[in-house]
Amino acid sequence: VLQDGQRAVIQKGGRGGRGNARFVTATNRAPRYCEEGEQIEPFRVRLELKMIADVAIVGFPNAGKSTLISRISSATPRIEDYAFTTLHPNLGVVTYDQFSSFVVADIPGLIEGAADGKGLGIRFLRHIERTRMLLHLLDGAEPHGSLLKELETIRGEIRRFNDRMLDRAYLVVVNKMDALHQDADLDELEGWC
Image 1 (tube, rainbow, N blue to C red):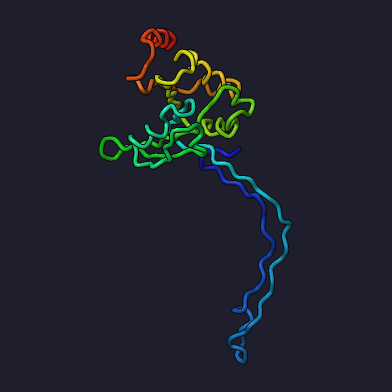
Image 2 (spheres, one colour):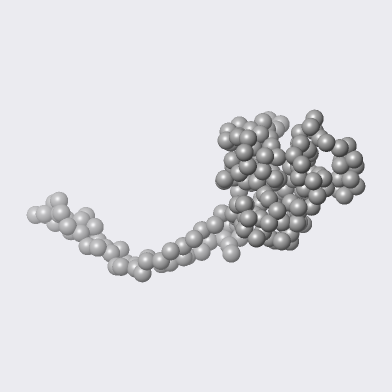
């Protein structure tokens, strides 16, 4: 694993062949031949980008993650009224003050059992590993049980995937407050946070 600023040689190349400029003579000013370079052994390399965003918006499907990123940035994610509309992270740049900004990632929806591969499973969870901070977006309108249970489910799946992720800074945001079923839910959630 390389750190920022480090360099590495993955494979050294073979000796290069001589080009047609090396074969120019007084009588042959435009040679039409060259030498091939040495063959090297082909191989595959998988490069993985570790940091994609500063903030990851995490929540159940249809919690409003795509709508939120479309309102706070100029990102234009697909917004539909069915689960798993977002299949890949959408990135948006949030600009504040005059020259300050940060990158937000709209992460595909999480469901219970994602750490075992349900839904988008590990593909979802690997994306949040590449962010500095988590924003847990809870859906006040959907009957996923209590808001606290929704938060515990999200954090539980993250813990099962990589418990070090729980050490990252996080915010808890409740969306669709106008359709919230019970005010007691909020008190319970505030007590946990």
